Length: 118
Image 1 (tube, rainbow, N blue to C red):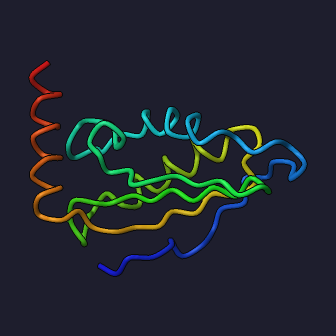
Image 2 (cartoon, rainbow, N blue to C red):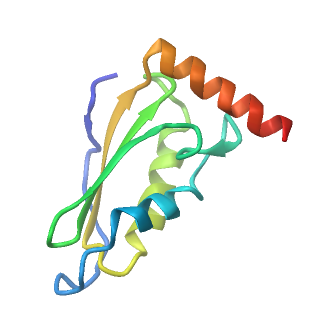
């Protein structure tokens, strides 16, 4: 899988004059985005590599998937866009995709196992 932005940037429809949402708020809302295969949220699993917001409220979320051919990528994408795009001050949402390294994948799987055990 090639790293890079998704095919289209979603326009959230928020006013460009609204103050950009804090990155911490975006990470908080991303805590509700579940990886359906692993059964835990993408923040706790360490799949969110970063978030940035420009002064106009354009948000970029960097997400690393467990595999290049992740069959649930579209589902995760829809959820990220819907949740982040609904925040006041967000003018657009872009997702930059990458793949976890072998070590990161092992750590992510261990986090998922621990979450299930709780």
